[in-house]
Length: 500
Image (tube, rainbow, N blue to C red; front, side, top):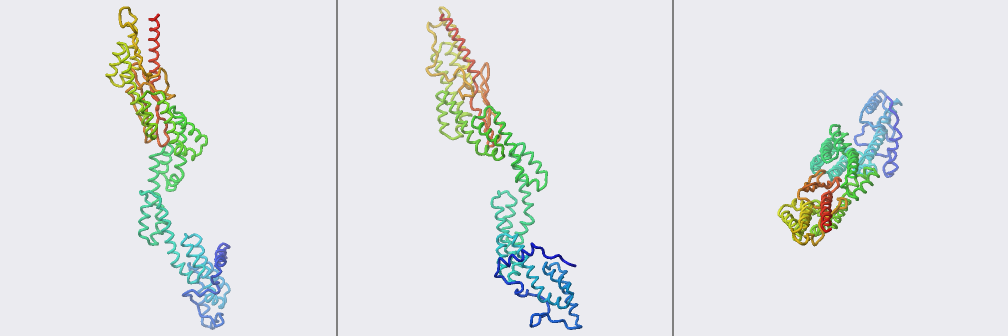
């Protein structure tokens, strides 16, 4: 049997240490390995000739063949053995067993140490370099025990690195901590080489379920596919697939925000910019960095608009919220403005009652005895109706007061004749408004203002860490205010007719 020559790669691996570490002994000068077998050589260093008729040549040939057949023999040993057998002389066989074998073994051991160095961790590399610079005995000691001790050091460091940033529920962290406590080289190696993938599979499945529960439609669909697949598929989802799917959900959510009329200008502009960029990184940056900032900015703008048009109580509450946190601003927009506006409405009705005619006063006092719905209904339509009654009574000869009622309040009314939610204006708020929420982890408001003859509904919106935007900031009531204004126009026309 003829083995191929050592490849150029192996030859380079053998020669490189000799170049790098010139202090090491040459193969020819290396001491004989412990336990090396073979007959003694003569004083001149040449093999003794086998005595004729002793059968020594046959014994040597058998030994060389045994070495050649041994699976533990390295490439250099096998090549040298083949060369000796091919020569076929007793001298060639004796020279291989007495000198060539130990030199070939030394070469093979250096190749083995160099290969270990190339794929080892820091501790293994350091130990291998030291052995290659040392004696033949140092090299043997490294191959027998030193490499395993060094590898155990590297394994411990690697396991500590793996579990350092893992959550407490991680199976890898749990089992890795146990192995570190055991601490034997065999236990550390088994954890990394055999058990780690199974523990990672468990962690990947748990993580995939967590991602599914908090993801959008695309993320949930991809997670379900991964959970039904192999270890490689579920690992690919956790490491890469979830981000691709999330980018789809992010794009869909931004597009939804842009079509929501309750979305503020700042959020709208930042969202459009993210869509125009189009990368998963840009889309995620919008939700994680841009959205919280722009959402608060839009909320404060809406608060300023309400404050500018509100009554005394609304302005005071708005000022307090503006000086507070974002949560204070949201609370004012969702609740505080309505409480404050109800106080302003009651104050206005009380003022109207003091200055109005008989019908106005009666209707105003009745509203004040009722709930906030009754107060709002009076301001929306009852006031105009009562004034019309007073105007009609004053126009009849011999009836009613000699002077017209002066029910106009001394302060500006809390309800302008025409305002829109888009400008953040104040409108009369009925007590009967509902709040409902959709989205992820936050509240959303839908407010409905209902009068006796009509209703007006403000916008709805969401506040969500995932990017759901829209505060439903302004109340409706424009239609109701317009209705009240129309009634006042009718009264004014009647007054001018009576004066004529």
